[in-house]
Image (cartoon, rainbow, N blue to C red):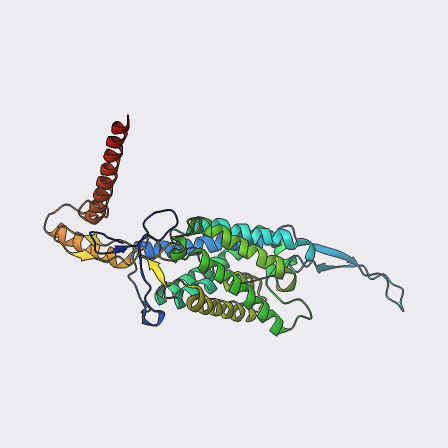
Length: 383
């Protein structure tokens, strides 16, 4: 083990000979749930990201159900006693609970989630789903304030996306019943709840495993493939459940079409089921699979006056990647003091703030240089 200038301990634990910045995990019950955080620019950007990406998720995914859906003309035949022709009547074609369209709908939902999580991960964590946000709140990876604001942004984006689907193809929207989730005729309510719970459990469990930074220390491809793994989880869930209830596993996905179309049939199942699955997935992963060690979340910042401020930045895909509220607040105070004193405004990447990183780089460079010089001397001796 090597002690770095900032006091952290680096443990050589990966299978590639590299140095992994690890520390003992704080027991879950000793971790504090953060209730509020400053409304910084990064926080607002995260909310905007959740809103915008959920909007496009509903527009593209629900649009794959609605666009092109039409009414089927059904001949009425003749009425028995009078012999008069019954004419033709239009009945809505079921464009969602249709076995012939399962694969295309599942692909649309899965690949849309893959793309949007990839886009949103660096800004908000790419939740796009109140059930995932709930799981991360329970895991104490996001604050209560962020959870509430994320859910509001997701629901607003879902409503806007569904409204845009309606504006694009009104006839198809009505024929497909808005793409609303509903149980297949004859499917018991308990079966629908169990289906949504199990599939959401799978999705949230995949999210936890794919974004666990401790696991990523020894499995380098995990963070890179996280959006793909999450997208494929959504894909397989839809393959299994589209024909039964349209497959929600996301309360926002069910909420948006229900508001715009006005169909609330079985709607409670698509909230209770996903939330149940998310809670169980959190409990199983937290107390069974979560590693006993976790990586150092970020290096400390050191100022010229010697003061050290510990960063609270969490790993990527957690919902706060790149968002360091406490550090931003400290920066604003120092910048205000500098301006009052007539000093130049400090930047976040000034040499003074990252002096610890510079010292570490110098140490590594000297080690490499010495090793290279030694190898050169040995080579000259041999020749």
